Image (cartoon, rainbow, N blue to C red; front, side, top):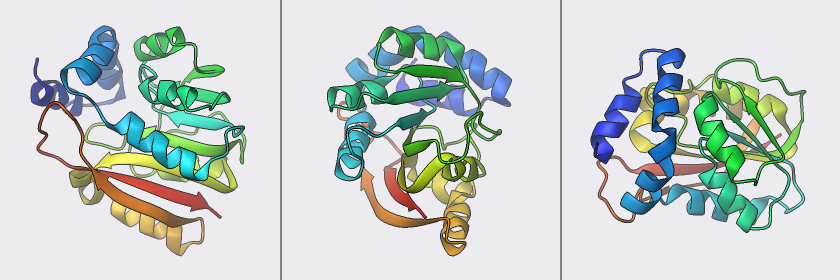
Length: 207
């Protein structure tokens, strides 16, 4: 299955149960397809943003960790206090095997997260705010569990930003004084394959 077909299959999931089942099925080939076949760039790009704003001793949540490719980059960058959540136990099992997370939990973005307020100095989220995935309302919970002055850093398909309500919700949170935009930039999705959708990385500081 090529990149467009695989993503179309994932994005067409009709609910979280089907999305979870499809990620469970993809888990065993996920790393090889994204890294070896396509040269997925987001883990390195987002890690570069984290190193600019987040101290090495910070407790970081990776929301929608998948198989742990982003966590692996963060770990190699000197971050050791990493927590992972994902809706797919199959993906979390692959992430657990990488031995870079101190804690892993099966949780669903868009629902209440089982963490107290102000639990993390930073939250990282890559590839989750997209079609058939976590809704824009997920941002509210991420703000809640991030400490004041902490950072929320995420990468998103540019065509999903306005289409799925993220543009409006991000602006509402800023207007409400919940967070402020620190940085935003576009980036290529893959180094080995062309993609028909650009990506945007966003860095916010929680107020």
